[in-house]
Length: 357
Image (cartoon, rainbow, N blue to C red):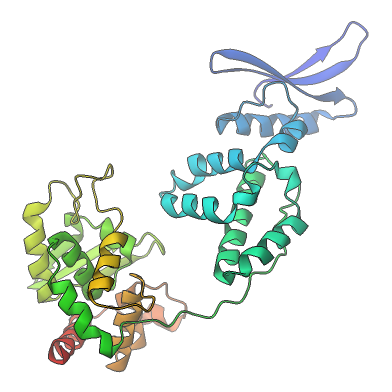
């Protein structure tokens, strides 16, 4: 049985399958096809597909499923992608919107049926002239959009991105260099904005991803037997991460607590979500003040901390734990998290940094 599936018999005996449903207080009737050219099982399958579209907020009106697929634009698909995939699963909406607007602009108004593999390859080549990474971002996003459309029965043909290879990217190897350290931390110490100063310092102290630190809650911070830790489930890997908090980080947290008026460590009254949204402007000002012109990203703080730990010959698995990387080896699953040793390693690299400065 499929919800809303009816068969209409004409005075001359022609039998036609329809979907009849009430949508937004209005009865719609969608022609599915005639029997026996279309079997009952096929009609049920088509009807279920239409029902899924309605649940996603798509009203097919009087178009058949095939006709709807042929006229759906990429803009319409992206709207449903945000509403039914990005937001419900708490994924990075800002990045998705930015990537869609920047890399897929050529396809925005095109119907899905117009986006062929050859056109995708052409767009990939054009983007690669400036950046192969940008071309790869486009491929990943467009493939995800069509995969969701297939899952939701919005698109019944093949994914045009299937089989298109991404460019091989050279891994980024940028970190804060020794000759930059003094200028960087001098500029950071002179920062008037306590919230941003604490945010960048805690990225170094905790090895957290930027988004994880932005959404860190006071309830994530625990003290037991004189050791303070941050404990939370990571957004990216969905794994539970425990990070010891060294004393300088604790002092910064104590300064932040009186400023917070909600559950978030980095409270922001200007944000609808209640926490710091974009530290990019503060980061650019900091780099300008430190006279660092070579491209250094906020994410490179993690590379820097990993480099410092590696130079101290810290255990590979402890570096993984500090950065919150997913475990890729079987051996790693048998190694327990030694918080005391972890705390000692973090203390060591920042004590040596202080001496260098």
